[in-house]
Image (cartoon, rainbow, N blue to C red):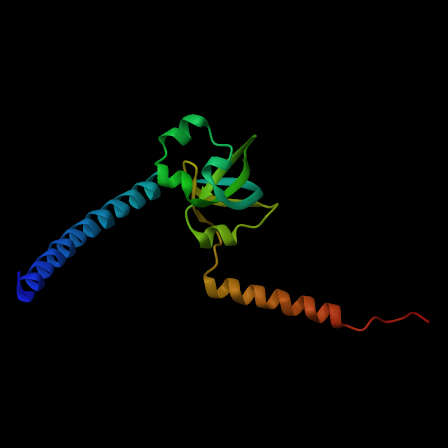
Length: 155
């Protein structure tokens, strides 16, 4: 085999792999879009009381054994945004579908969320990243100002 033959073979292999990845990406994108559309159609508004939230593996959460068996193996190994919440009289462990939703959920408060099964897909009054950063900055400045304020002595 000459150098030219090797280069042609490598080009053909790269072309086949590239074409395969293109079609796989198209198929995966379509599938994700269909799943998100189905979750939006099935979502309902709930009022929940957030007890605890953490980022952990599904196997460490108290999900039923049957549900864990139905999960794909890679999902059981991934860390997800878990929220322990009181929904009506029940205490459930739910999954936030997005990091922004997880960060925006306040602890120990009643809030209205859009849920699709065990997934929290949205929250009423959800702020954008810029609004959340501005609010955090304002809180830090307010706490600095109150701690630096001189105390008045009553004499």
